[in-house]
Amino acid sequence: MSEPLVAGVDSSTQSCKIVVCEAATGRVVRQARASHPDGTQVSAAAWWTAFESARSGGLLDGVSAIAVGGQQHGMVTLDAAGELVRDAMLWNDTSSAPQAARLIDEFGGPPAWVEAVDLVPVASFTGTKLRWLVDNEPDNAARTETVVLPHDWLTGRILADGNGFEGWTTDRGDASGTAYWSPVTEEYRRDLVRLAFGRDVGLPRVLGPAEAAGRTAAGMLVAAGTGDNAAAALGLAIEPGDVVVSLGTSGAVFAVHDRAVGDVSGAVAGFADATGRHLPLLATLNAARVLVAAAATLDVDLQGLDALAAQAPIGAGGLTLLPFLDGERSPNLPTARGTLAGITRANSTPAHLARAYVEGMLCNLKGCIDALSRNGIHARRVLLIGGAAAAQTVRAAASDIFGVPVLVPEPGEYVALGAARQAAWALSGADTPPDWSVPVAATVEPSDPAAGALAAQRYREVLGATHPGAPVG
Image 1 (spheres, one colour):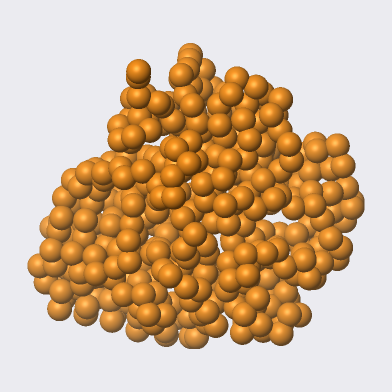
Image 2 (cartoon, rainbow, N blue to C red):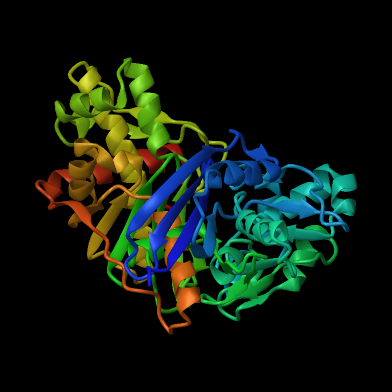
């Protein structure tokens, strides 16, 4: 009898990626990808088009179970007939920053929000987008009867395509990023929905970690799915002491924890994970895109940027970059722009500038690691993932700046793998997910942690002088 196959979907901002794996081992047997449109507001229909393209050619033949890991926070609005009201507002749409500030005040300030849902609203979160819709598009708000998240919508669409749809579902990991579901009580805060939207609205049923959303007409089990970061944590099989630093276009820093963090500063969002635990997380808008901008500035490709940065010492000769090229979420500075400080004749070289871009990206993420530490979550090691983790200078500088060993897993689609692992878990009916190995490409020990600490300190000083009161850094 052949080994059962499962599939995991990563429906990200940029693309739809599908991996098909052996359920017992996680070995990838085939995979495919299709692009999503660029932008901060995108029709959810484009996600289905990409999914259909990626699964074409029999990719899912013989698959027994599937799960979707999706970009978090996006607001998908549906009318009474279940049709899309407008384009989805994605996590990276920061136009609801004024609404976030007002909601914080209207509910009694950060401590009240942390007590209610273990986070403080920022423009990324779904609840702030609900208020934006009411303020800016009242006709669309009036037509909206149900609000779901990107992974919820694609899960439901997979079931509807096979006539297995029985109502919208989500999971605790993705629901915890809305700012109206509590990872402490594991219930929706309907009062916060009404505060944001002015009335109640239909919301998806929250499934348990190994619970199924349904089956397609062909009998394929569709697992709960989850948000992309919770899926990545499941794909990497992280445990306490592991801190993941993800260097995609944007950045994320997260760890598993056994309880809600209660960070009243608002820096750490107390999300839930996909196993029943918690996933305290900080996200940045600027990560690998900082390196792309640096390469364009210096007229090199990314490999050339890596080689240039390696020619300059750690600390970039005192050149310090605040990498807020597109505003920032951590720290919460949605209208900020980048700052280059400490320029001298000695460090005005392409190599020093390349190094400053690399270290600016990493020092901002170091501030996120420090915020976790202030909440009792200490990094024993860092797992560095994402496209930018391939650069040798990034790996070495990360270990020195973070001050702990850095493990670089083999390149892989860890969000999709985590979703596949969840599908295998739901298929098995076991109490815990299957034990899938995570191969490591490199382990980097700090070579000059004192110089790394000095670079991070200088970064904090520039941040404090440029943006007084910034909560992370």
